Image (cartoon, rainbow, N blue to C red):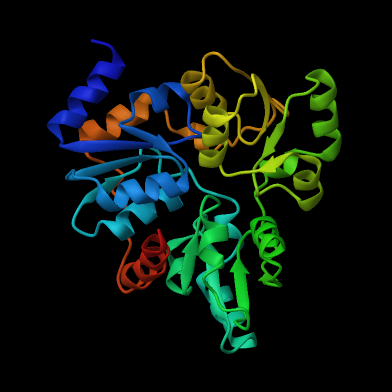
Length: 300
């Protein structure tokens, strides 16, 4: 029996559903029930009919699944898979920021810890941030944490000014304007897609700034046969699998998130086999964080 067959048999026995982020290893994506970006997986976690959710990604994602499913068991294959951006702000720092801006609305990117979500009014993902942020009134002051780049991108699209926390994704910082120019020179005519977690000058140098879900949609619907992709290289597996007639090039092969790669077939099998690495978000943090996530999901 292959390890893939072991995993699928265990998932059936445990009445489990396996969710995998677009940045995880290709072999992990292939064995999952659902693959997607943070928005797609947050929606799936909120509606999935299973007793056990196994989240292949980083810890804040599994926390979000646990927040949305208080009656279910949520497992993460590798609990040390963290997110440097999420760790760039704490709940106490959000409270201090709100104290400096009384009456302001606090909005957090889903790439944040449960305690940060619990201090915020609304949560957003890179896939729905523009739509969600457009629901705030023009006179409402907005505090956006922790990603300065996504916050700057959305505020620019909406013609707003936000107070931005200076957080960032170290993996997306690897992409530079020079790197995009070199990719264009190597693949003339191919459009460049980058993630909104990239810096402003990088977004400006690209053709489109899209979430990974948005990149998948662009690839499906575009007539382009060659596309340059500026995000974590794990997305290339899904893009190539869903669009075998098209060619995808990374802006750089160095775009690898070490935390996303910590999930392996072996630790995925082991966590199902032993029902270990249960993710628990304590109260009242879970209830308070759930309000922010559900407020986002209610917008659609």
